[in-house]
Image (cartoon, rainbow, N blue to C red; front, side, top):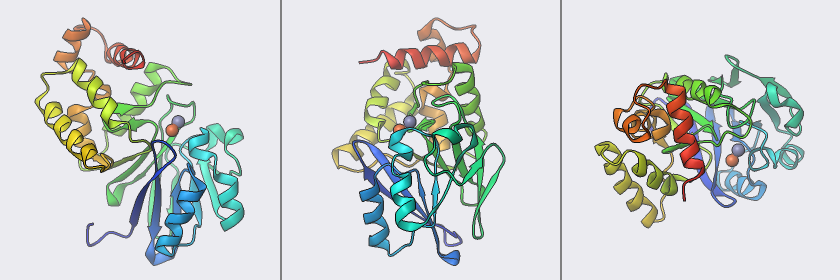
Length: 260
Ligand code: ZN
Ligand code: FE
């Protein structure tokens, strides 16, 4: 951890393949949970650390992200912050936020980015000073969220917004899907040397029972097929050499949906 950091992050598995995250700000005595996948696991993590839950930051309304909101709010009197565009679907929402809003946890500022596509109002939280991104179900290690409520153009736009952040940004996503993502990625860009190298690393980590999350945005840009609509190899493979980026992205997403 950077010696100048003002935050501590704890990552722990929840449910089948979700990750829970606690974001702690020691100077202010504040602790936020990013989403509420698993009340028991979040409570256990708080207890382990001796932290008091003060905030719940939702990325989107899906039950594996907001399902524990009310139980945790009742227990801790925590303030719930979440996407305004999904306000009616976020249980117990206290403060609706959207693009450009700043969520302050004491001295730590989290910038809200609208990243619709997986759901219509999905948001991400970016701590610029710490180089940290909580991406929810928008960007995964070697993957991206399914388009349940948005169009490919919307999701591509959202991913480009994330791609504009610094390469050193640490990406905390909400699921451990990397092993299946890597198989798909190799199927459409097998000659990408950075991807081949990463595939080995993912295999090694999973064999050792270790998480592949978080990752760095710079690595995602080099290896994640959903960020690589400009790749000549992918375009040739999809026979979309002259297509626009959205068309290439849409085809990659469609192929992943049907990939076994
Ligand atoms: Zn989701
Ligand atoms: Fe999810």
